[in-house]
Amino acid sequence: MTHRELSPGKLVIASHNAGKVREIRALLAPYGIEPVSAGDLGLPEPEETGTTFRDNALLKAHASASASGLPALADDSGLEVAALGGRPGVYTADWAERQPYEGEPGRDWYMAMGKVEGLLAEQGPDADRSACFVCTLALAWPDGHAEVFEGRAEGSLTWPPRGILGFGYDPVFVPIGNSLTYAEISPEEKHATSHRADAFAKLVAGVF
Image (cartoon, rainbow, N blue to C red; front, side):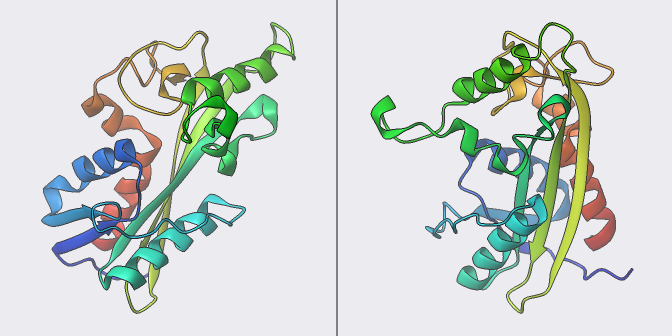
């Protein structure tokens, strides 16, 4: 399969999530790319109406590429829990959405982690706690061309949450081969083993 090469220069990171933008910037650093986030450019966030990670990543990448006239890289990622039939999956961020009566609009990741744990607890002490993070990267150009790459990180869920590094569900996710959560290891170590790193390695092999 032939991929289109990405030339050095500006690239829009099609995200308003500061943690995600920070990780992608670090991964792009060695490749002569000048990343600028959709938030920095004041681009609107498109409604994520897709039912798969691929659908939503492509939707966001095409929206930013079209609005900016620059190549755009979008990430759609989430947590799949085996015992919950793959949920929250593509709705991972939605599980963290606060209701208006709960204070300022935004995302409460501890609430989301608690919801996952509550559903696992209903299955009893022998519940399967295996889970994986999935990351789909979509790289789109203003002319409509796009490339898609998927990565995975297998692991298990722990409770209570541990660590102050990382973001999202990182404090409850222990990757295979480690005893620490993603929120307890350095960003450099996480970058080397994460679902985003896996997807990014495939992107690098394809377009650089």
